[in-house]
Length: 249
Length: 327
Image (cartoon, rainbow over all chains, first blue to last red; front, side):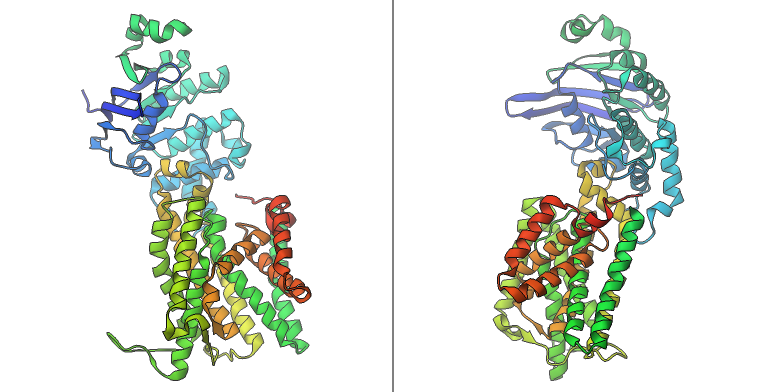
């Protein structure tokens, strides 16, 4: 089997007496969608924060592209190819949708220390950003300030920004949240093709989407992974049914 | 809206030389000096506007850089006048009274000082950043007071205003044109930086630091560069200011001066290209008009500032031209 793109090993994180992440191990292999599910408060977002680098874990290790990234900051991990979207859209509100994506293209090209040429006249940035907006279906909203976009459009813009980074792995934190059935369905189809560009660690509450997309599912409860397996494994797992699916299925 | 802002900017850009030329024509050098004062303060604030307006870095220590420029002008002028070298060790360096050299040295020294200050201060944000930049500026202020070689508390008089190649700088109109030309040049540089890749990253870091980091840009580096460039511009303005007044003293380094620069920007419009110009015009006019009526003119300035902050968030430019438009 190929080397995992992302390898998390025995990760622990405590806030005082609360174990938010309890001995979590997780792999993400090329070409796969690995879904991370769990009830509210299970520590999914805390885990994402540690992978992205906004939180530092206490013990354990995170390897990305075969490299220990434990000591690296957020921007450094992003440069290595970790493309993250946020649970609550996190954009530059005054900038248009286009400029939001252009900034990501610029970051990906690795050249923010250019002081003289106007960005809006830079075709290499603009064309690439427009292409990303086209892929998520947001082209006609390109000039609109991101603060004025609808909730669903902001979710799409998050994806376009992640695409522009040409990441080695996607870290998608509830991309369907608040999208509506129509939007979720379209995004599901899109993510299905996206896995061939880079593997996806998908945190999602929408079970239809998870069951349709995931190659493997890990179930997180109280900071602990209680099961990892294929969709069928997870559906049949009695522990999972009790802890999680029992509420929703 | 973008076009209206251009119109207002053009009007403001023409207003200053019109004022200076009219005053010169009527034989009123005082008003030429007033216009020069506006241009220089606008230049200093334009420097700060890069850090504060574009980057959201509320530096309460920019008087340090303004004063550094001022002292460079004063020190060069003194040595040039006395025909003594600046340094004798390790090599002897003679002083010059040529402004372009003094400006470059001012900008260079300011950059060297701004680099460590920025590196330390930029690890904090919000109120802490304000306080740390203030603390550094106060250190430099007290250093100047306690350094007798260049006047200490009394400051340093500039017997002969420094020169400019081919221009008689003692003529008030000539000196205005030098300051005004430099202001236009810096405003042009400001637009280039604002619209560049660097400017995009800087403005994005102000709006959402986490977003910028998560796409792989380190906000600290971007901000540090902005802080240093900002300090360099303000230092050049300081050199001009000292030459205008033919005097530099610790007051140029004081926290009042830092506050005035921030006030200028807020009055004119934070982050707006001509915000510092509009702010400097308003500020100097208030100082002149209200200062003639009462010693306590700053009380009224405070009230006006309060009104601007509460009711006209975008300052004068924001009031006239509406919100900022990013392409």
